[in-house]
Picture 1: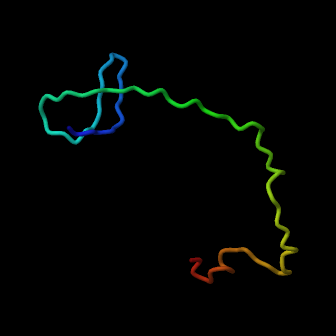
Picture 2 (picture 1 turned 90 degrees about the vertical axis):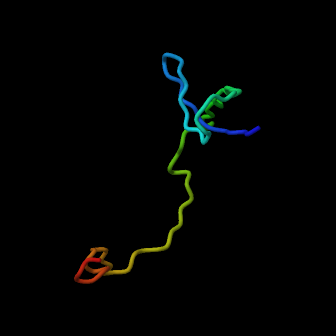
Picture 3 (picture 1 turned 180 degrees about the vertical axis):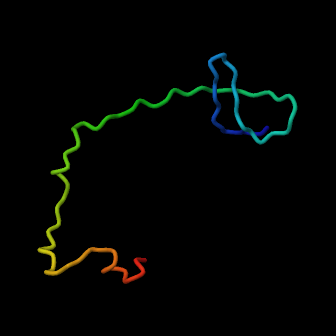
Length: 76
């Protein structure tokens, strides 16, 4: 006996399709349908101000974050 676990798609008309690595021909299969787990929402709404903050001090004077200044003339 070979045990294969795969996902199937059930169409509106009740037909089932799946991609299973078996040779062509007639096979006997047992299908067990499992309910999807319930979606658990977070208990409190997300608050961005509750995230940790790291203060590294002021930026250096004259700091340039332009691409040309960081990577040179070719911009890479």
